[in-house]
Image (cartoon, rainbow, N blue to C red; front, side, top):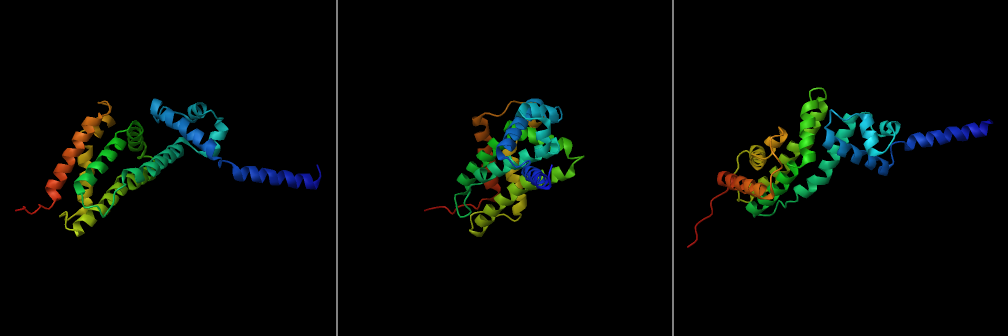
Length: 224
């Protein structure tokens, strides 16, 4: 092999290495396979070999994209949140119709939080956060904390507009999400119940909004 051929071969290898793990279609294929497997078998029972078979890729290819299943799981969680957050929190801070805004937000949030993939993710994060505290911190920061902050922006705008009376906005925001999830998520986390019906979700959210506005809504002046 002459020197020119050797240089070309080295350049080819360098290009191949630089592109390794960067094919979006292959990455999507792996993520979808992992999602199916985690939902059907659970996180702990799924091995990297199982994921590779489910995704239809070699184990070597799988490791090019993800070092381990924890990294893969984290990528799934990040992707799900990035897709869903803008849809769930499509609220206008200038909208003074707080009741309607909270009913719509609460309904979207409750339907998301009770979905099978989200319940699986919450169980998994709790199970592995002791050995991977950084994953637990990221899940909380980009999940519950981010949700409370976004709702807090809306609530603060309504306080300034004189529509609501709230002294502790972070607390009120967290309370709203706790009310919305009441009786819905905990049984699912413990595997004690089937996913709630649409009617049940609507009833729980409506009750949450009534309680929230009862505590923080300013009474309207009576009309003559």
